[in-house]
Image 1 (cartoon, rainbow, N blue to C red):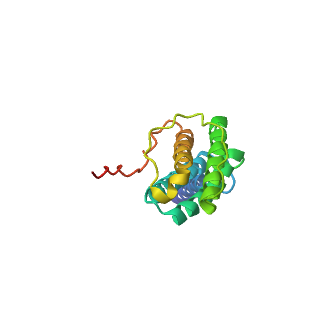
Image 2: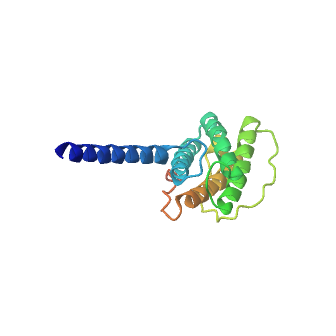
Image 3: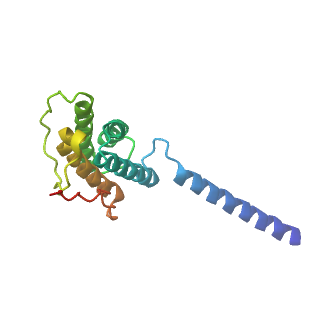
Length: 176
């Protein structure tokens, strides 16, 4: 009798352990699925990329800004395509507009003599961000609009959770 009870307890414990392990693996999986953990991982990635781009752009580093734009653009393309992540249509559209600004900024940084193309307006209000410093002045409006769009994408990905503010450094006071 004691042996049957022990086997039953062992079977229940093993089943519970297997169920917990399977649930953890399913939650952690990000291979091409459309689950919420996948979207949360995307939000964390986009937030990190947005903050990194903000810091290097407002630091005036052209090469790092261009490199960050080149890393961000494919992610925005995935968001715009809407195939890998379960996101709202508005967020997908914003991803497409943001990708256009990222690509255009990168193109202008690669060839500062190139003429900027007219891009459609963003469906989100653009906050008053300070202009980018000297060497990035050519793409200041594009990058500010891109940062605003990416913040809007984050709002869509986080689904009502507060979006951390942009880490924009304080605007230096003009010297007399």
